[in-house]
Image (cartoon, rainbow, N blue to C red):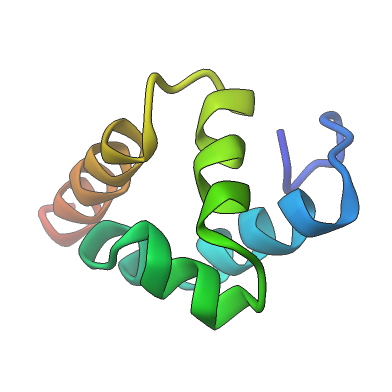
Length: 75
């Protein structure tokens, strides 16, 4: 949704989403704080993105990215 621009996000949320798409390892293996630092936003913004995308928490978003990377590796 983010890549195709069918989902409109505020600037900072889009900034985090685009970085996550470009570097899924950053989310899969990082903390909300490390992702926030890499994106020059607050950890709250990273957590907010997770909930806007339909996840319960950053932890769930992180698990989603981990699963994605596992599936890409095994393809």
